Length: 190
Image: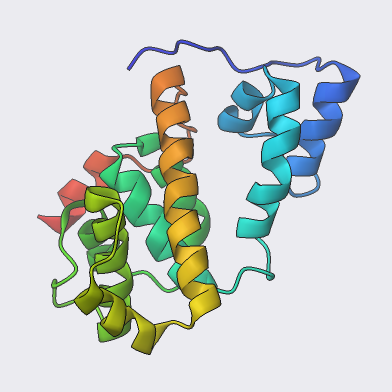
């Protein structure tokens, strides 16, 4: 996909610099996606609190569940950019093995690398992405694994990263040089 919207580059205007600094850990350069979003500062200002919530400890989900949801959603949406950022930054931190990363990218919830809990979370994400719903049987199984606040977070987090994927893919955001590619997982999973 060609780059369609060029990310901002330095020197940033003061308002853009303030938004970008607030979106990144101290001392880190803003990622391309955030620099692309900063082309629309009112939108960026609106997105930031929701994005901060999803990456905060206020989220009802565990960090591992959060990353299962994000990685599965971005892989499903063929968003190599956002998938790569999250695999690079969080896969090791949440204990995802190479086999699990490959399964999130190309596999199914029934792959043998998953615990029952992980498989049900992934199945719920797949259901939302395929049908925009969760049927009664899956809801019953999911309700054993997650409480109501966690299920609400799962639903909205899936939709949030679907929207992020749409924007990154449509804008042609180029991947970060330090982020893995889908093909890297395909090679290690073979």
